[in-house]
Length: 284
Image 1 (cartoon, rainbow, N blue to C red):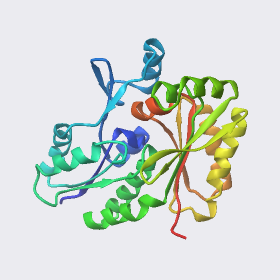
Image 2: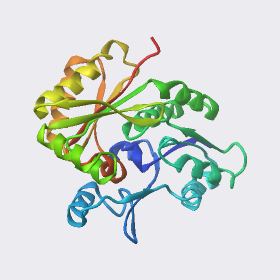
Image 3: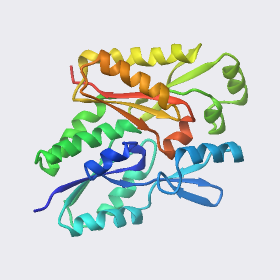
Image 4: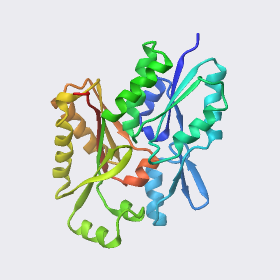
């Protein structure tokens, strides 16, 4: 009997055990230092990436999987008689979904559905989990697609970046802004709005204070939470992420608060010691 397989790309940042449990197919993006390209999460880990940035003094470039990468990943599922829904990194940030669409055209019509998440990191991951649960409940490909489309604008994704260094290396702030920001201990708050990353605020002060602000921003939605899952996502900040997770478990009705680590692509943009909270709110 055919089934529906859910695929995503490596920027969904779902923990490996969830990927295995639900047989979620992952197509990695690439990080490139000079002439050397590495598959995100396959050939390079975030810790290795941070070490390499420290060593070389510059950030890697990132690249989408090619249509050929998608064809290679999709083919076994299609040959097994399964249909596929792919949920990928926002088209405002990457050509990943466009390349997935090109690949889908190589297979019989209607077998592969591609959905732009309009999000990143576990903002994608929460949509992937919604799709998986719907597939496991026996919903059709069209029904699953509609569930994801109805949910994607209700995903709240917010990160606090610990240092301006990576924004500076990535050309997103000047040397002067980086210098002044470091002196004043300014930590940017990045949100995802309309599929794009925006600078929502600049918090000044001790790290504990800024993390408390992140938590309060999430708790603003605690009466509007949809579904069972919240994600606390971090880059090399596991201890603090665990503390944030415990607070959210205590202060919300969420049945599950995931602890997730950003992959290489997301880490290369946000830098180490970043902490984020991702949740899905209802339509009210």
